[in-house]
Image: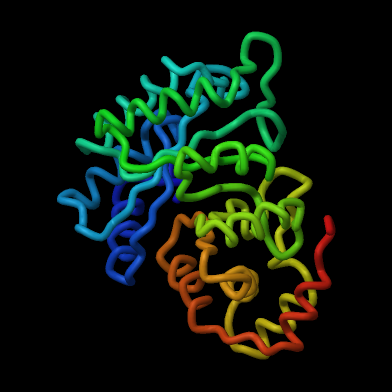
Length: 269
């Protein structure tokens, strides 16, 4: 949940309602609003529910300026971000930390001194795991080759852009399933980046939603859930109404015909 522009009462209400409805996986990062999201989480949910898995991400930092993010990929920068997560979240250990690589878009792409070998980054994360500061290691914005390279580390999840209209990372989805790694698609309902249009605007998605009496967002998320038990999408929301609409996807049973129709919508396969 990316809540950096939401006032505290609204953020608190959404987060508490999510937990009430059984959500036990929340995505955050210290660079989301300069730790604003972490602060919302801590204020709203501490003491944290025992089954809540907070998953953070490292690889960038907040800066002032027209574009508010800067890459922070070096090992000591990753360590600093995790320590900030621990402080702002009020945790002794971050349950899972995703390494956000910057070899490809969307967003920032590393060049020059910002290019850091993945082995150097993984070594630092392994050290942090050994120290007990993080519980497990994940990857974000990575290729199939990078996932395979990192398998000996014990990767628990991969977070890449993926959705009903964007199958760029289909090979990675299959690879994760084969190795028991959770696939955590971001931008499942589109984004401001032009290469990730919203599936909720697609007429086929809209028609199937009307047939089921749910929102187009619920259909797009139900399609993801039907792709495999290892898939856990992370749609962001700022309202309780949209939260409840998104969670209704878990109760949608798409027919074989509907799944085939939705499969055919890919703009990237």
